[in-house]
Length: 504
Ligand code: MLC
Ligand code: AMP
Image 1 (cartoon, rainbow, N blue to C red):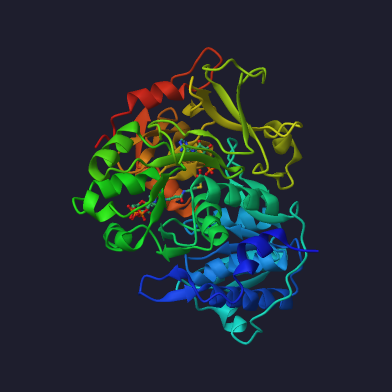
Image 2: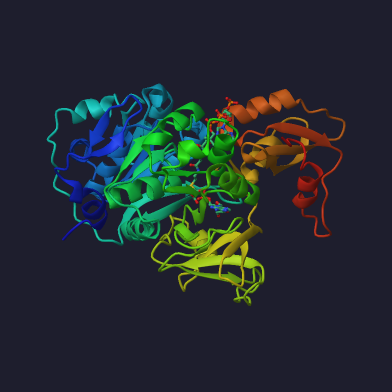
């Protein structure tokens, strides 16, 4: 027996003294030390009584120890459930309860707030702080640096990532070992990663991009990462000279381009710049090439599928497109009403099938059936077309979703909070263009008859309920919302009316 994910991504680096992580203070963490850290944490978790298949809910800052917790889960056969550090306690309660997590790992600052949830659920709670300290790593120190890897098959679950739904309820996307492994191995080949690469890593590690793309590729290639806690423009520019590749959301690229220190000279040695998670404006692609001589490689992925398409490493990286389906991934454009495949060139919904496609939503068979067809095709909710040369273009979304700085925001979730506020009859939350975040959130409200809702009170309610990145940047009060003959709010009319609200 074996454990394909652990054996392939981690186990092969046993005893290797080469660096895996380059830290902001100039220090490094070798592969061997990283694996030892993971094994010690795996010993702690099994000592707490966790067994294969149990979920570990994790809301911690980015640190080598946080990444070692991911390695530990893989080695012990536990399901890793990373959570955005911006989530409020109210948001976390749902994820923890829904997943039935056996262990919660959080920053010491959140322990008091999360302990009642752990008690209700009969879950353990341990801490891991931004500096790597905490009860989890304290216990790990006295544990053996080796751990007997738990047997798993490629079809066993490796991770849950929660993704919001159009009804406002989040769904736990179940990702198997094979989903993660197949994608990492494909991307290493497609993007030509080798052990010589050094990836500039400033993405969060609680989402697909920073964890399953950037980190898993590094592990699969045996390369190393400059592991930064977050995107900081000065640090990015400072460390660029030590890197060979960078991955980022479009905001990374627009911020870099906004700085005069970001030059052809600074980037001359770089091998690859990858963008994804949100649309990269063709204009940004062109400006980037003018400034640096590099063409950004844009790819397209999702929580449920990891990466689906990529522009070519060799060959034309076409601005405004997401390239071709990756090897092993089938992609078709279908009629949203009938599901029938559309002729080449027509716009329809994007469906994908392949070893990268998730197993379904945790304990939500109806939602799974609605999006994941019996024949294995997943309905992405994105609208696109394939041009005459085979490049996939994403032209819009068939789902009510805002993507701000690479974070997904489901309007329904915010509308539910706004509608609940005194003096509000109804609300519509829309995404409008924003120079830094690509899109940002605007709340449009209708007052109840004779009422004048207080927008400050409303923002206060939003703040206590929802993560900061979901907060509307502004609230506007209108007489009525535009509706079609079926009574459905026409958000396209609102988006058009407010498209210049945050113009740069
Ligand atoms: C931070 N803020 C945001 C925000 N990020 N608001 C809206 N959208 C965001 N994305 C808040 C901060 O809390 C802060 O609040 C204020 O906005 C300004 O913060 P900032 O300092 O300018 O932001 P910063 O911390 O620099 O973060 C911006 C960012 C970050 C773009 C660097 O959001 C980021 O790293 N995004 C990457 C997201 C990602 O990894 N997505 C991948 C998903 S996987 P205040 O209170 O100070 O005003 C996926 C699949 C795939 O989509 O295909 O990859
Ligand atoms: P998430 O569920 O957070 O992983 O977000 C996935 C969504 O991000 C996709 O369904 C797309 O709408 C969007 N997305 C990811 N990459 C791109 C891209 N390169 N261009 C446009 N949209 C993208």
